[in-house]
Length: 73
Image (cartoon, rainbow, N blue to C red; front, top):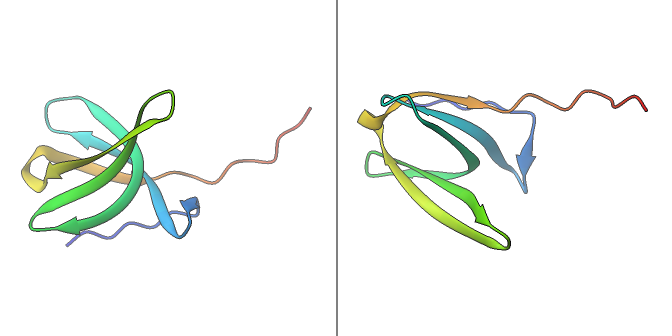
């Protein structure tokens, strides 16, 4: 079972970091879970985004982004 808790979100959808079993990782907006896949909306380049699907067996860990600390200037 997958539980994601994050204080940071985009219109109610959590922003997550995904660690893959091959040692790579990605981050983006968690759009959902469907048919054994995690659906993540990722930034590509300039104004381009892509909805990517990751099979559960490819994933080693999923973490919600921590909240931003107050910035000191």
